[in-house]
Length: 102
Image (tube, rainbow, N blue to C red; front, side):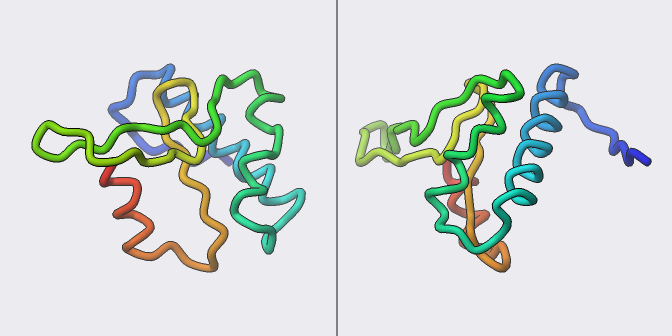
């Protein structure tokens, strides 16, 4: 049974999100938990599904209009979706803040 939650995302982005989540679940099931965080994005599930992505994309962090540093995105999916990989038992507020700050 599929549980569909209403969304305001365009249908193509909603499809990308669902495929990406499905990819993540497939990777989690196969090697399972316990690997180093850096290993998970190397799994080829996104590629197998024909989804474009970039590993470790560097983006500028600006403060008062100036670039103060660069931050690395774990996986940038199709130029529209940030995938932050965590190999932790629980997602904490700091993990959410890391993604929201982008």
